[in-house]
Length: 387
Image 1 (cartoon, rainbow, N blue to C red):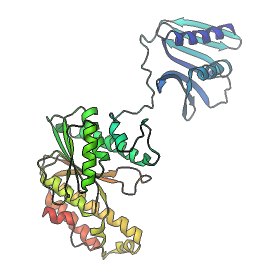
Image 2 (image 1 turned 45 degrees about the vertical axis):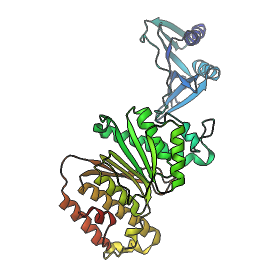
Image 3 (image 1 turned 135 degrees about the vertical axis):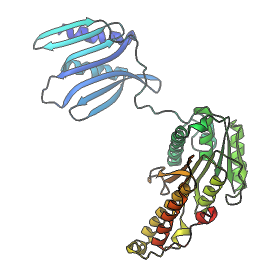
């Protein structure tokens, strides 16, 4: 099969000349096989060229990546022992090979492609975390940039958080047009997500932002300010304060992640008072409502079981929070922030301020009916808002 060897040589030369675009192999010798086609491309993985081979079957595709040396062997074996046809696309010529019985045919056409494609790995995810220095300082990454053994869940949480922020910024385009976005993170703790937020908005989204973390523990505030200084995050600062009595200026985004029990309500209240365009909360603990549960309907069966009562209290508490946001002129959404594999407190409540006035009466009616169903006398956020 002289012409087949010539076709393989054409393929190898296209790699050497760096004019290779794609190689497609088809017509399986074994007609009963589920494997119908193989598509070969070049990709860069960890700064090195690899062959990416997509094996197309009747019901699914399987993608495998190989270093060049191993890839040549796999591809040559596919050409010689599996497929009868080959189509090689380069920027110089398109080469075709066909084997019918014992008759071989190899020919060339004018190139379909004038430029080689970007050698980007298809599964490469967008880089939302740009500056990793602060992650080393915070103990998430080691000095080599690898995730610390006990910080895998926290790192996934950070990545998910900036992904959520990216999505919300796209849905709130008026924020991107502001000269400076003023953001407060209430109950910032050690500042993992506060730093990631600042990094994403300033280094990825290329927006000007002033980010302030508010935390009750002075030692954490001191530590976070030092990390911000060494990271050269000039507009990121941390202040000592409690959510409930902290006075906020007019802000654009309020964040409160895992503020315990009614501290989440304090944060939502502060955000509404300050006219924040975005209020982002991940609640933690739901004791205030759970203590009041006295369901007088068939729902009371749920509250007979401790763990189910706890979960139901979480659902009811966060539903009322979302409805109160709606009544206050926000479009509310509730979704899973991070998989329960990493944390049991995985719900995020987001309020996006809208221009049209809210139908307060309708929302308050829904809240009243919900409270009645579970014997709830009062919801802390409802009292704060005095609606």
